[in-house]
Every structure is written in structure tokens, then in C-alpha cells.
Image (cartoon, rainbow, N blue to C red; front, side):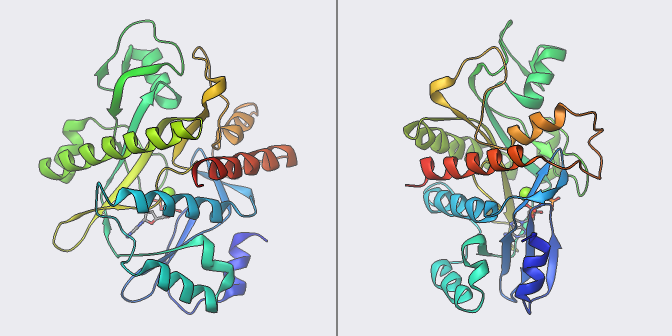
Length: 293
Ligand SMILES: Nc1ncnc2c1ncn2[C@@H]1O[C@H](COP(=O)(O)OP(=O)(O)OP(=O)(O)O)[C@@H](O)[C@H]1O
Ligand SMILES: [Mg+2]
């Protein structure tokens, strides 16, 4: 069922406060209810077709990582999360496994990207300038090569349209020096945590994006989704071979198909063929099965 329809059928009595490309956010009063839909977005455009169950996979992967992130940072899940989700599930079983109940926080205006490998817009930057945005790199690195060390490459968080790379100095100006240092430090630590666990599952965590928010007292929290195939590049370790793009568990499959078309990446999105849809869903489920055991 298309996800808009699901949410209409469910008929939640709570006000909808935000509708992102993938998530719907409802106001529970003391907290937000974040429902991950089955929508697929690529190049910041929402596709016509959804992937049945994708929202569940995203939510369950995020919950796995939030539990592990507590050693490194505060995060947005309410303290009695499991009990509150179980209660929600009694009234709205369709929403139980695709929902998070979270503290109401103010998202920082940057996205905290960490890269351990040269791929995507990072590879594009290296080809054009020999650098990874502001960072100098060795010469003659291949596409998908491992970086000498993981690097923090923040972007703006655009209200609509594309997020753009931003220098660390500018990012620090935007959110404050102390907050920036904390975001950078925690992001690199979370990435390392992800790398270690993914490696046990035979997966390379090439890069990822975190979001953070603050409470009224200015305390920092990890928010949104964590180390999912929507926010990260996961590559199978056994076939890793620098020198080109890698097969992956994330939506690169959708991106590759779209790149093969003559589409200008502005809405409306072209239809995705059944093979691309099922192939993508299978990859998401495989990533889930490998990581969350
Ligand atoms: N605890 C939280 N408090 C407030 N906002 C949050 C919290 N966690 C996540 N968010 C915000 O909720 C939205 C989630 O929706 P979704 O992931 O679909 O958005 P998106 O399309 O990726 O991004 P955007 O809405 O910024 O275009 C994001 O804007 C995210 O920053
Ligand atoms: Mg998002």
C-alpha cells in the first residue's frame, strides 16, 4: 500500500508537524512520533513507487544503533521507548515496527557526514580538485579507495533541495565552535563504531551521515536515523575492489538506474522497473539481516 494511504487509513489523532521525504512526524504532546514510510528518495526526489517494508527495516536498524550509541552520546529516543512503542502498537499495529518516539529537539542546520572511502560527491570533488572538499589527499587515489583516515565533511541542511558541502570553519560559525567540535568528535566515534560492527558482518561502511539536535538547555543529542542504508554506503567486503563504484546494500542501485536514464533529476520522478524495486528491497533486507542479529 502506498505509504500516504497507509497513514490515512490508520487515522492517527495527532497533528502532523512535518512530512519529510521519507518520515512523517506527529506531535504527541510531550514527544514526537516519527513514522518511517516506505517511500524511496534518490537525488532528493521522492520516487513514485514505495518499497513495502522499507520503513520497518530503516527503523529497526536505527534502533539497533541507538542502543549502541548510548556509550558515546545522548540520543533522541524517549527514556521509556520500548514500553511506549508497545503501547502505540496496541492501538496502531501497522505503525509499531516503523515508528520511533523521540524527544522534541531543534535539528542543527548541518548534516554530519563522515567518509572513510572515496565515493559519490567525495570522488567527484577529488577528480575535480585533487582534494576531498577542503582536505588535501594523496595523489592517484582510485574511486572507492580507502582514505588515509576517516574525514568529517559536513554539509548544509537545506530546507528544500540539495545539501551542499560546507567548510569546517563555516560549519563551526553556523553552530558554534564548541558544539561543532563535539559534533565532529562524536560523529567520528560513531562512524568507527559502525565500521567495527559492519566489519563483523562482512560489510564495509564507506560513509554515513548523522544528524544532531539540541534541547532547550543547549545539550547535544543524536537524532533522526542512524547508520541505515538510506544514510550510509554499505559495501560487501568480499567483492571490494577500488577502481570503480562498488556494488552496495544501499539505494545506489536506484541511483545507478536513474543515472542510466535521460532524467534531469527534478520532479516528477520516472517510474522504477520491478527489477530495480525488488533488487533494492532485497539489498535493504540483506543489510538488516547481516547487521542486526
Ligand atoms: N528528535 C527530533 N526532533 C526534531 N526533529 C527531528 C528529530 N529527529 C529527526 N528530526 C527531523 O525530522 C525529519 C525526518 O524526516 P525525513 O528523514 O523524511 O526528512 P528528509 O526528507 O530526510 O529531510 P528534510 O525533512 O530535512 O528535507 C528531518 O528533517 C529531521 O531533521
Ligand atoms: Mg532524512
